[in-house]
Length: 305
Image 1 (spheres, one colour):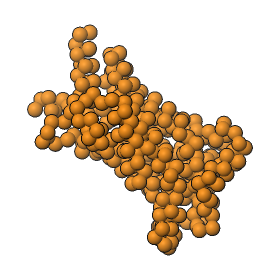
Image 2 (tube, one colour; image 1 turned 45 degrees about the horizontal axis):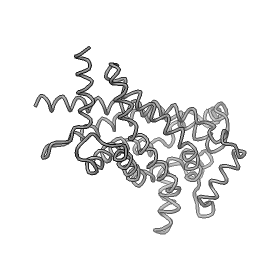
Image 3 (cartoon, rainbow, N blue to C red; image 1 turned 45 degrees about the vertical axis):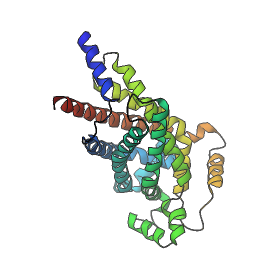
Image 4 (tube, rainbow, N blue to C red; image 1 turned 90 degrees about the vertical axis):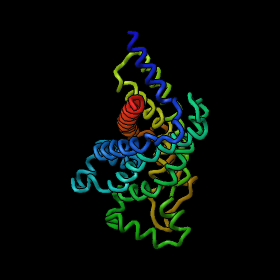
């Protein structure tokens, strides 16, 4: 029992120990493994996400969304996967590294306070939104079945966006719906990073297997964050599915349209949310567990050196 407590203490310590000056950070390894885990989880869960997207756009039941996709043909199951596959891979390399860099700038010596974790998470979410919003925009147009005839490929969408003027390319094209994306990503990252380590540390003290605390912590955080921010997810999907100069309602008009389409009932806004929340739980649990595994391995190598 004494050895187990000692091991747990070392695990808690390695997440708060500051990086020694002049030493190369282990973050590059975490970027690579995070990219692989995000790539795999995105590929495996993409058909589920596409069903959920149809629910968000058309306010239909799961069975009806599945029938609609099946009627279009299996060849369209993975239509639109390239933008999210690339964006999620970049997210896996960007989010954790940006957060760690900002956290070390705010608080060079651990343990880090809740305020520091919240601020670093919030700012890393801002960086993520700016970098990845164009990928999500293209993805949401591709996944809308109403746009298949007019925009059969990613190239056709990019050609449409690039036909606008400079400001139009940003406001109507690549960064359509940016403000709710910014709110969703920044708040989501702040919530995730604020409570990830406390939950994980509390579970690690119970003597559970090494991989369990990280997996549970990531899953719980992913679930809660997605549950709280799901209305923003629906709003983003609806705003970014619009394309063309004549069909661009404002942020307030889009929010009002979503509210009216769902019969002014919060429960209907969460239609399809169960699958999204489940997907978020699995994805973030896996990502957190892999990241923690790499972090512990890196720490062990440093101690040997």
